[in-house]
Amino acid sequence: MVAGTEMWLQRLMNKLNDTAKNLGIQINVQKTKTMVVLWDGGCVVNITVDGQRIEQVKSFKYFGSVITKDGRNYRDVKVRTAIAKDAFNNRKELLTKGLSRILRKRMIGVLV
Image 1 (cartoon, rainbow, N blue to C red):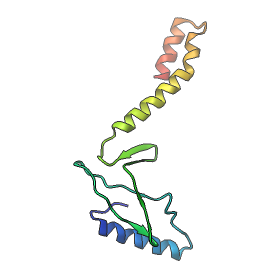
Image 2: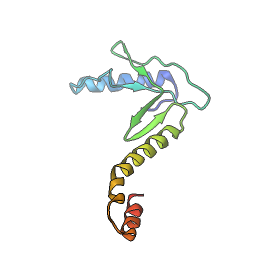
Image 3: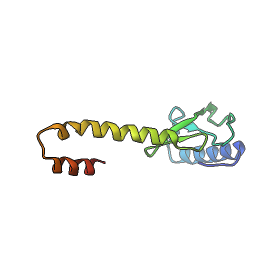
Image 4: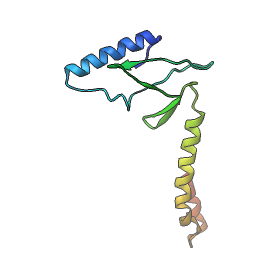
């Protein structure tokens, strides 16, 4: 959920919680997080569900992307680069075996 103020976010959370209760669903407070996205720093928000405070975080992973409180994605780029490097290094042994130079070049092109 996105809101411009803490009050509006709490209202949205209350509506979501009421709707969930009507459907027989309970919000898992341990898995629910809040984050304030600001360029010049951050502030603390106190959002609650049934009297339990929701944890505020500086970053979290959402659909494979790391979202940070400053709105930048440097950390996400570093994480994805590290994953690609690990994947390449796991296949590195294929390039050192007795393959022709042409085939090795084609494999590097495919891996990259």
